[in-house]
Image (tube, rainbow, N blue to C red; front, side):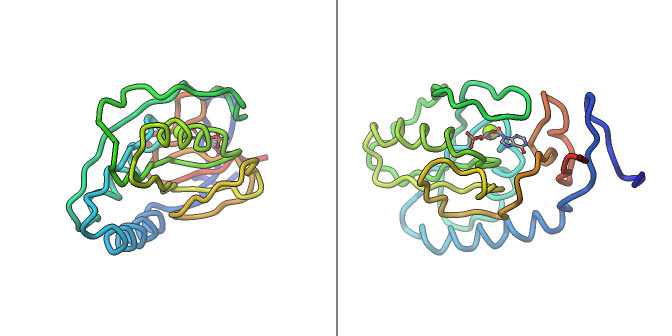
Amino acid sequence: MNSRTITLHDCEFSPYLYEEEIIARISFMAETISREYAGKNPLFLAVLNGSFMFAADLLKRVTIPCEIAFIRLSSYQDMESTGKVKEVLGLTEDIHSRHVIVLEDIVDTGHTVHNLINQLQAKSPASVQVASLLLKPDCLQHKLDVKYVAKTIPNDFVVGYGLDYNGLGRNLRDIYKIVS
Ligand code: IMP
Ligand code: MG
């Protein structure tokens, strides 16, 4: 077995995306956003817990004036996405007439982001776009425009760099995928 394989709870994971590549992709995303949102003072809404590392590394590289706030949605259980509507918690900022960029760790079925966008649109922002670290296009069940994606990946369960498996793995610097 690969010596860098790790075990979280009952599952084994092997290295998939190294920190260097993650940061390079996030830097490119930050440059694009800085160019496209110049003069717009975007409000980043980072979805906790999964996006905390992504949000920090992205924001450090955004070069235009911007703001960030953190929101939570009801939690995610085990390895499969549930189709349930998740309520937005902790949004105290007034997003009316603001250019909002939602920061997500991963878009899988798209239920979460689809539902979140609908809840945000109801508050009349100037615009809402999504920036996700990862996207699993094969799993998408909604017609969603995820404008900024650092990397698209196959339908494998991944952990690390903010992403967890039942609470574990968020602290890992690299991203690992499940050994099947
Ligand atoms: P969706 O609603 O199916 O798009 O699921 C999105 C949420 O499910 C993400 O924000 C993650 O919290 C979680 N998720 C989906 N796929 C993975 C994965 O491979 N690893 C860890 N969490 C995941
Ligand atoms: Mg999440």
